[in-house]
Every structure is written in C-alpha cells, then in structure tokens.
Length: 169
Image (tube, rainbow, N blue to C red; front, top):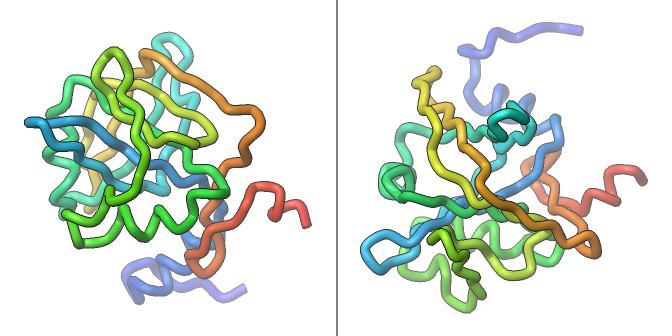
C-alpha cells in the first residue's frame, strides 16, 4: 500500500477519512430567541462514564459553533435513516432555510433536539481544546433518550449517508 502524507492533498485526506463510517448528529440550541443548528460527523460517545462525556470536533471556521458554544444547554440529535435529506438542508449556507419544515423538541433544560431522531443527548460544554484546524469539544451529558425502533444514519464512503443496517450488506 502506498502512503500519502496528509498535507499533500486536502481532498485526498477527506476521502481517506470518509472511508471510516461515522454517525451524523445535529447540534442545536436556542440563543437569543433563535434556534442555531449545525451538522457534525465527528461525534463520539463514551469518552468518559464518570462524568458522562461525549466529544465532537468542530471546524474553527464555523460561524454557527461560536453561537452554539455559548448556550447553557446543547441538544445533540443522532440523525435517523429518515432524516438523510435534512443533513444537506441543515448544513447549507442558507441560514434562513436550515430549519424550514423541521420539527423540533425543546427539552426542559433548554436544549433543542430534532423530532424523529434515533437518539438525543442534552449536554453542556465541559471543555474545549484547540486541535489543528478544529476545536475538540467535550460535552457533559445531562440527559438522553433513545428510540429503539429507529435506525441511525451513518456517513461513509464518498461522503454519502446510509442506514446502519446497510453497512452489514
């Protein structure tokens, strides 16, 4: 196998990273009466069980993360197979159209999650670490819910989404 250094070609690194399947989540919170939302594919659970921590890596060039990061509570929605089209809508640069037609649930602590997701976490920012061109954000899990009848959406190969069950085929 031939090796290519990561700095050689940005697109090549992105393609190599896309070969590893990962879940897709939406991070959302209400700030100043407006819901802010963004998509992330770098979410990881089980960073710690005591205290319960999850992590997500977010690009420092994001205009949404600085607003979300100030929220007291951030909802993390594990997107389901029926929500594939939402990933492009929410990730679009059209900030006014991101949530058109999207059903949201507001949790008692103030976090916002997408209705119909496979699982959700109510979190707060625990720590933020600058790592390369991203911020590694540790999120303390304060509450959660799981819909056992819904399959999670998975991001893999050529940057497309799939149902988790499709990975076994």
